[in-house]
Image (cartoon, rainbow, N blue to C red):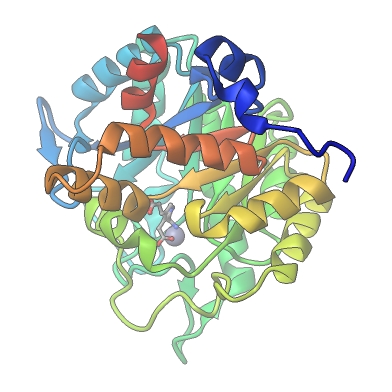
Length: 325
Ligand code: PBG
Ligand code: ZN
């Protein structure tokens, strides 16, 4: 043995040493706060399965955006709960749609905050699927691309800095990039939900955003949780189609995927610490079974250690409070 007397504990003796050898430092600048926008005024509907999270009318949304900006959080990602739904999801690309108005509200309230929008149809379709449903009930990939491109374009027109397609249709990054470029939005970036798994961890989000599929499931477009190599392939395709950031989602059960994508590609990598991951920690904390704050910080640090440059997390404001203390 080379160092028979080597004792790792020597450098764990004091906080001074521990902080000197710390390999991963979570920063407020790594965090992206997801927000749910809803119509109306003075609305702050608590999301039951996600304690501490709300559906916010634009006045409250603006207030929360200001808080995020003041805390040093660099970005928010916006989801909308529309007043009406239809088969196509037409409120997804309406210029006076909920997300479009939310973008302006956030931009006005917190001009330094980067505004990202989730691009998908499932909150806007009456069937709850992320794409166009064909007569035989399969999800029509290519018919969906045009609607996604229109949605992304409408977000850019409203002032979004980055669009994040979460639908998992093949070819959507290219379709969106092309639509943005054609209309003079070359400066708007794309964060691709590249490796988005068909996960039960999205459960609380679907009640928050009222976006659960009304028949079937998302297995024909979202990825099988058993697959790793396929995630690398998906990410490579998104990169070639023009994605600026590659995302892995969920995060915690997929740390190996974050790690692999970090190793394979030079693009920035994002990880989505999804609703169910948030709810698990909140629930156990509420039961007194774990120290929720410590588990939160350990979790976010682990996601960063695995290779994420940025983390979308409902904990963003809570973690910022800890980090800024
Ligand atoms: C919409 C979308 C979902 C999430 C982000 N965008 C739900 C889904 O695909 O079912 C999940 C976010 C979360 O669980 O926190 N496609
Ligand atoms: Zn969707």
